[in-house]
Length: 376
Image (cartoon, rainbow, N blue to C red):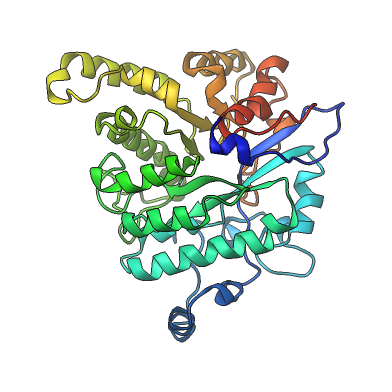
């Protein structure tokens, strides 16, 4: 039995008449970034205060015409603060309303720490985020699960941080950005991170991020927000390529990886293309023993957000076909709350067959993260 299975034993009481939900992508915020100060050393607290630090990520790209830094306006608690900065309001607005059994937290914008050239600062802030997350969210609701936030610019320090808090019974994953600070995620420099994740029984989860700082722009720099949003999936494809052909999953066959907020419809073509070139060019990557598609289907999972909701009714059946091509057990529900792209679970999957809907909404996450069955 893995450590993840041993650690994840509590979920919320659910309504047995409604399909329960395990949400794999919820973004809590501090009410103010000053809430992180108690968890920083004197040096870094003074440094960030004097610099009038505005947080790890000021919102969305400057090209975007989106109010409230991309948060739903109604996600702001009655007492004020950032979206999803109140556990009680989150329960009322989302968890209780949609029959959540478990919520996996990934503190909002913390994935952008990896873009900072000041890796000492990023390491300190990551540690503060972890202690804040444990004290203000996990300790107050045993159904919540957390992400170990790290600064992967310094993989050795990142591994130490994973070891420091990764054994917490509610921590289930290491939180990473889909952009990597130095080279693709398949680079050997990141191996200490994968080793620490395995040591602590944690999944490695990659979240969408935007270029800037140490994050390189894509091959085409978009001029418009819809263009940038659409290009997100290209970064996911490039990183999956890097991980597989870099031999990460061959070396660490106990490693589990989850990719959220990058879509999933690109996968059939990506897997076919990777398999084709691997068969023809094996001599260049002799360490890749298994077909790339096999590695993806055995060690990778993908969040639903943004879920495909076809404009044409006749295309709805093709969404199910795409999921089946990838693997019905590979897809996990992710709402992206409190952002404006939020997917309400039962509305998003209203036309999906019930057996597949149940897998997406909770059964697949049970297996990946080791959650107990919320229906029993």
